[in-house]
Image (cartoon, rainbow, N blue to C red; front, side):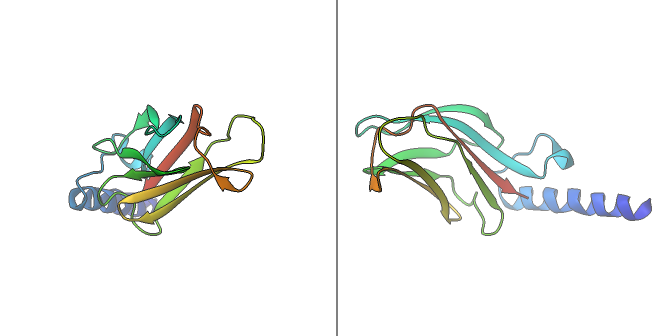
Length: 138
């Protein structure tokens, strides 16, 4: 039993140390949840930035979501998306005409890139209460 206690204590210690070094993180559930999460519904029309309906955010602040070009969007929050610690869970797109695709990928420690397309061409007006979750594991 002491081996298990030591492992849990080590995990909690690592999470605490990481949270101290990276002030954008807040994990209210402590060791029960080894990640912080940003869960949202995104809607975007025309050339506007996406409208963000935040379902859950356990980062210390809200990421910024902007449109950078046709069918291209950035989610940014400084030092919040470290290499090999990020999982992105994209939702499904509402049915419409053409083959619709949502791609999301970590670009660097500060940014997640989202692209939407119809029939292989980057397109706006694709996000319609589309679920997206970003998890950063501690």
